[in-house]
Length: 232
Image (cartoon, rainbow, N blue to C red):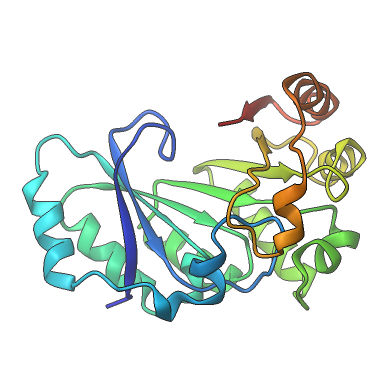
């Protein structure tokens, strides 16, 4: 079974509308400099894994009030056997939400086809022409396009979301993202959090203020049915 690196036992916002827990999986295909899960991305082997028996007892012990599990990372779809872990959750009658960066469209497509996922949040890191720059990776952007298209055609509840970072990702980028994903349903503008970042220089970056976030969200509104802001 996939190694679980942590559980947030109660989350009110990771799986909107449901009483849920968030499960953290290690490793990622990207190296976004502002990411605040540095150890989880760069050094997952240094984080103790939870025993499979503990996870099963955790799920069984919350039967009757826990409604869903959100799988996040890192990048959950990095793990080839993620399907097995999701089935363990599904077998207990729980809903499943997946957070993904879109790097693995084949695995995403398979999970969607099997009906194993109820909701997906896909991080849109930047306009396509800036993806490699912002993620500090060699990602084939066609994989990102395909993942986004899969979600848009799935009929499944999904959210596209972008973390905005002063000096790296701003309003102009969000407009270009809107032009790419025009007509999509829900888009979330996320505030950058300068904590335990992959690139230590980003610890010194001051996040956008509320007024600036609202301006960025307003710039996205012509392109999406619904636009929200998520800030700590």
